[in-house]
Amino acid sequence: MGWRVRVLFKEVKNAEIYIEDFIGYLGSVNLGGLGRRALADTNRYKGDWKFGMVLVEDGEFVIPGQWVCVAEEYSPGLNVKIARGNIIVSTRVGFVSYDKSNRIVHVRPVKSIEGISLGDQVLVEVKDVQEKTAVVEILAVNRRPIKHKRTAVILPDLKTRQDLNECIGVGDLVIGHVVTLFSGVIGLSIWKNELGSVLPMCSRCGRPLKKKDKALICLKCGNKEKRKMASIDTSTLSEWVFGRSLAR
Image (cartoon, rainbow, N blue to C red; front, top):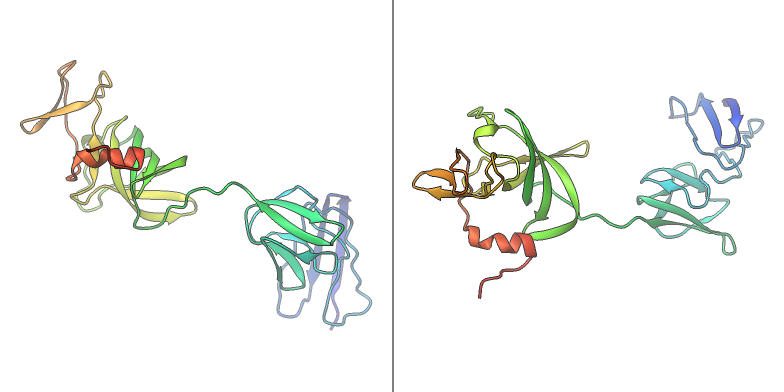
C-alpha cells in the first residue's frame, strides 16, 4: 500500500504536506515555518519517511511537542526528544539552537515562571469585581511572593449565589484557594472560613477599612462596607508579602 502525497509549495517558509492513506494515521500533517522545501520520496515505501531538512530555523520560538527537525539532520540535545516518525520535537517552551559543528539541536528554555497548582493558597489583589466573578492578580503562592504576576478569576459560590460585590472590593488583598486550571485560566474560591479579604480597601477613597463592632468603616471618609473576611491571623500577612515574618 503506497502513499498519495500532495506537496503544496507556497513559499520557502510556508509549505504544507498532506499525507493520505497512512497506515494507522488519518488526517493531514501540517508543517508550518519550514526552513527548506520538503523532499518527499513517494516512489519506494519502506516503512520510513524522510524530509532531509530542518523544520524550524535557528533561534525560532517553539512550544512542547512542536517539530524541530528530523533525526537524520541533527542529534537530540537538551530539551528535545525523538518522537514518532524519527522527528525531533521540543519538550520545553523556548528557542531552537543548532550546534552545526557537532550536529546537535537544543532548545534554550525561556525564563521559568513560578508554577501554580490545584490546591495552592494564593494572595491576590482585586482588580475588578462584578456580581458573579472578580478579576485578580496573584501576588504570592503558599506564602511565597512571585516575581511574575498571574491573572486569575474568583468564582462564585454556587451554593449561596452570593453577590461578590458584597464579599470583596477593588484593591482588597484576598487569600484564595486554586480550584481550577482550565485552558490557562486560574480559578479561585474564597468560600472556606479561612479564606477571604485580609486587607479590605475603601471603595470611595481607597484607604484601608477598619473593623468596628461588626462593621467595616473607613476612618477617613466614614464609608461603611461589607466583606467576607478571612479567619486567619492578619499578622501573618508579612509572610505573604515579604516571604518571611516581620514579627520579633
